[in-house]
Image (cartoon, rainbow, N blue to C red; front, top):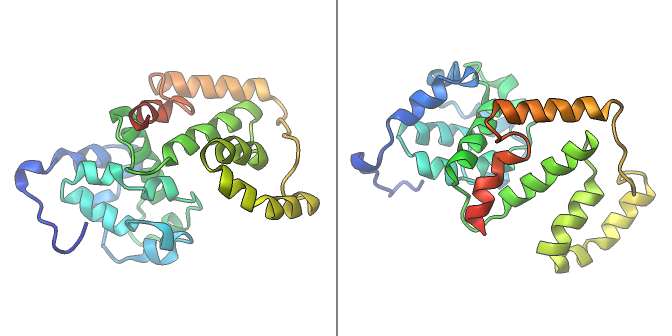
Length: 207
């Protein structure tokens, strides 16, 4: 949203704030002070097209599509630093997850971005092993979508493997069957839009 952008009342979705505020994680959303603490403490703020503060201002302005098309929820590192520091006790990180779920259900994808595709691949790997396996995610993602960049980063990857920072083979957690049962239950509760299904509609739109 630029300072020159004009928002016509007819294009506002005034119910968007009510929908988010009605969620358990949106309990204190209306209490946002617009203080900017969230953006100031965010470790990935330079990569965010919109700070959480601006996202909440856009929500209040009824800019539903602009919010759901923003890369901010997908870039969020889920470190919870903003949630911990928020003076209004807003569950900011959880709201970012909620925005991704809503975007997935409504088939809205950030323009010119494959963040949704990456998120689906990442969650599929976690669902398989119970934990992330960086090498498998990078190989599957970079090999098919950014092969040139993968070749350029091979040296860095090799050094990380030699230092034990990137295991060559994935390791399943104990009780993987119970974990998968939990994932399936989460998918059922979300109406088939659980860990993997959350972004399926958006990826279809992106293709």
